[in-house]
Length: 316
Image (cartoon, rainbow, N blue to C red; front, side, top):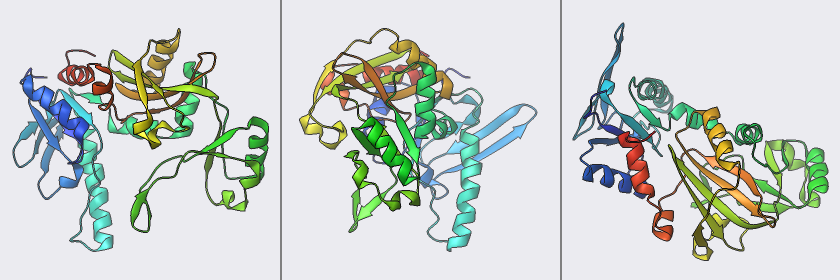
């Protein structure tokens, strides 16, 4: 890796968190090449050679070129998907697949690169059942959870562990009357379960009797833990009703965090915990592409600097 190798940033155009990090890297004189997968092939091109010497080649945007073997790190955030609107549906589907496995395979194979995070590892970690199972083996306290398509099993679980909440297993784009919407985390009773549960998979979880939440963000060797006080079941539904404070880690939490990140091969993770009345931390989830920038002005924590340090490879 050359000392002047660039940082690749892969995200969509509207990503204020990434803007902060890129500005910090520019101020440090660190070269950055930013692109979105949706730019390919209209304004983004690449050529990768794989020989006995390894992977070599370049990736070109309208303003910059990155030598693939010299990329020092890759910040994989929230790129848009490949689109080929000028093609018919079948041909577009073929072209999208070739782009995904072609360009996607190349950026997942950079020889001297620190990934934050590797796109394949992000994909692995996005499966909630996998994350919860890994959390148990990593030593976290995890609320009793059921993933099922069987209505009778859902009713039995709710009666045994009530109060119980329903969570979506993933949150794809969902529109109601043309307006973007999301499926909320809500408490559910056994009487509300009907045969429609058999139509797909559902996640039910014992509701922790919490007094506060924690968003804990890991950037390489740095850990930033912020307590979030509110009266909300899901604090993400109303940011105006939140109070923030920096909090220390209970015994054993860092060890479990490191074990969890090693399990998925992650350099970054945004963990969510619930704190109960006796101060125990309960693992809820870890987002491998989670948001964090809004916490910096609320707490004064040097999170942008820490992310820039990691991407610059000042830290590991």
